[in-house]
Length: 101
Image 1 (tube, rainbow, N blue to C red):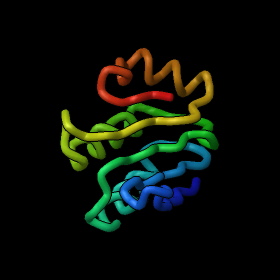
Image 2: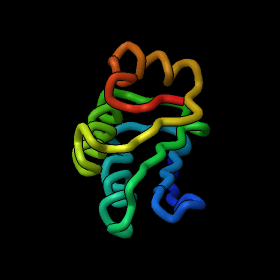
Image 3: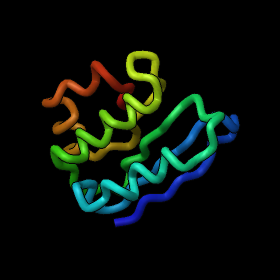
């Protein structure tokens, strides 16, 4: 498991990349990725291209990010999901809360 962050080219986007399992063991690292960053972030991208597994605690962590980023006005996209991860997000109706690409 590894969580990496970087700024997007626009300077206002924080890209959080998750490698391996996205579960309770990543809770603190995931929170640290967005809470201890710069305050001028307006957009968030959660890159799941290297994520092999996602569980209910990961869904909760995504909801915590949404609250932190402004709730209904948050601009968060979840990108590069494999079919299994996309199915979990779809079953959970997360496409109503996040832009899933």
